[in-house]
Length: 373
Image (tube, rainbow, N blue to C red; front, side):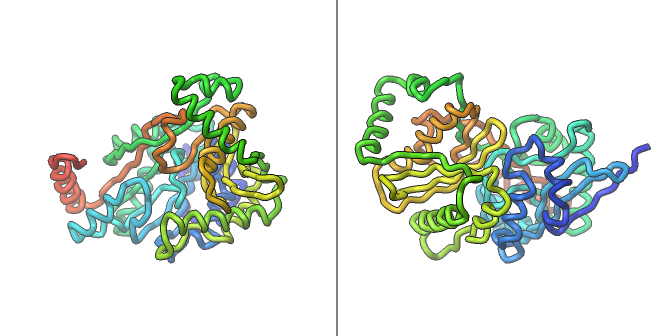
């Protein structure tokens, strides 16, 4: 009979790269060990921001077979997935719903979170054991909620099991670009109606007429100063849109650590005028998927953002055989440029009879209010 036990680790470093990445072979790049280490060891994620690592590993006969990257949280600030619902419930009821166990990639709102497990195991059996242990941990630590955000769309087994185990599903829209059999950038342009195709060509021509060209810089060939320049541009964009009252989520040490240990997953879309660099956008890649994250520019130029983050990366994706590109969270300009809306799923479970009852009553009232729910 198989002997099963769990261990909870207080950092990604303690889990170890060989164990973690051995379980993350077919997961997206932001689910890999080096990325979590960069978040945690840079201090971008930690107690100051309410993140206490509690990564859960399942062992069968002393062999690690599954991993749930988890954080114990004492707040629900900036979790992206619930739209502020947990903070709202906490304030309205006076109950500590924000105290919980959270499955997420912190400050990285990208569909693809999952429980990592070996391919030779039954996912349903493994996922059920993991969810049982999460329930036990929440009860033992008097945590009010377990929250799992941006659950991967591929392999619906975990989503179905979460619903069976009493989780509430919050579904939202997210935009992705798919290669619908395009063999060239002209094929992509040909997918639009004439008027939209003309507008896109006009935007691209305006950039070309301004003497701006692009290259995709492989992270393995980039210098450490390129990673630090990306941090500077990230901060500039942050302060432009968020002001100076809130510190950026990510710091310089995070970008430096990307250069130290994650550069094999990184590429930069770089805009140049002659020898002068005008803009950079950061991408992660793995298998046939490309993930856009942050961008910034040294000079405000019309259509530079669209070209740096959409048009040139799409051209690059087609040329290199990528089948999907995630342009990053938010933004209202993507659908008219060929991106498609897909559902993204978040799950919340309330622990404790009274907390479940109060949350259900509040949510029921919200659903009855026109325009809410």
